[in-house]
Image (cartoon, rainbow, N blue to C red; front, side):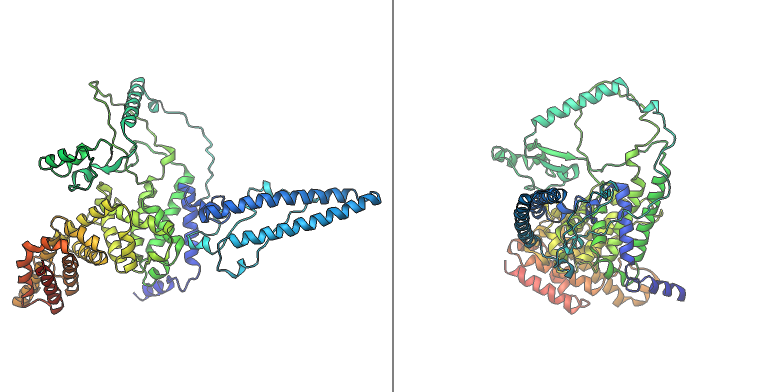
Length: 599
């Protein structure tokens, strides 16, 4: 035990300056080699200029091209004068005139450069105050071969580059020792060849899809089948011409199906995302296998270090690490469009699609482990993470990914990870729920979460949280959902209104309070039996009951929501007069009853 405590103190980032930066650079290099992402965030990459400020660099390029033309003309004139030094005296006067002209052009170049430097964004570093300019001189005896080396000879860097999550170049990092050259050429497998019947079917499907795309109007709604079935009335925009018919048909169809029928321009997506095709045999090159193992190893180190107390504060301040985690949350997680195939009465022939997997998508196993480590790391550091200090390019991918996993209807989001044990219930949705609950501690994060579009996904998030509050089997998820609903309802009045109109939201929160009172009464009346057998309901703390009461109070303060509390006024009155209720919770419940009474 003493040795383990020593190791924990050793792995504290404050004791190892620069260690986190080394891990991030190695991690970024592996992701560049595997997925081809994050290249533009390195110093010297051609895409770095457009990433920092596209408009400013366009102006710089235009000015630089004009300056380069003038410089070339000056250098040509100087070379011409050097070659003919032994000319007559008449040529000397011309050379003096040329030199005076060159001095004037250099003065113009200097003034243009000062104007360009003023237009550039201000950098906070002291080294950016004195600009450096490299002037190329032509020498007949030295051959310049720097362009043939394949290395970057110039780059732009500053505070903005590091603030958006950029870093130093990582081309020098060795990610594997195996050769990328394939010595033996593999022959194509006959099973991979498609039959003429299959080609004919694919052509028919393509023609049918082209016809459907031509019939669809320009404006379309993207939604999954789960979104369409769970949509409440008014969630989808109605046509003015069919307004009367939609009102009459709304009572016939349930779950928003009438709205889906009224819209022909709905782009339906599959509930399950794109995944790899399982094949009997999958051969991966040695260098790819080694690269994937090293990347997973670095990811495991980052994940393990996030458990060490104190490291969460340091990791949450590193913009490069937060950028990488945001890129990995939804990497290659896409829901394909639902195919509308024509009706055919031909018998489908089952054919072998081949015995080898696609070489371009060899990274699926690695991606699953990386995503699990990413979600675990975010759950560990989210208590100290303040997303308001980061730019939109960093915080938006994280919030968008977390909200998507929270409402994703796929089995990948709701089922446990494939790498965990049989008895484990750790799933992406539960990790995201924990992350959002920790992020909502800070008001700045709550504002960013509520401002992340689209609003339809926000409504679905509230419905998911309400469902978790009503589920008594999982007490941990229930309490985290209560905390989230409380923070969201107190954050904005529109959100409080959206939560109140969710089916069972008020009832589930009151049931949470009643369950807490039931356990408290059992503890007071039969304290000896509580130690002998576990209670039927997990006991909750006074703090959580106070959060549930504050959520009800935030919803009751809105005038439109007070009619929703009419049916539950008696239950709230019974809770408020309970003898075992804490005084803080009782005062909040009384304030809620007072707001309801003003209806």
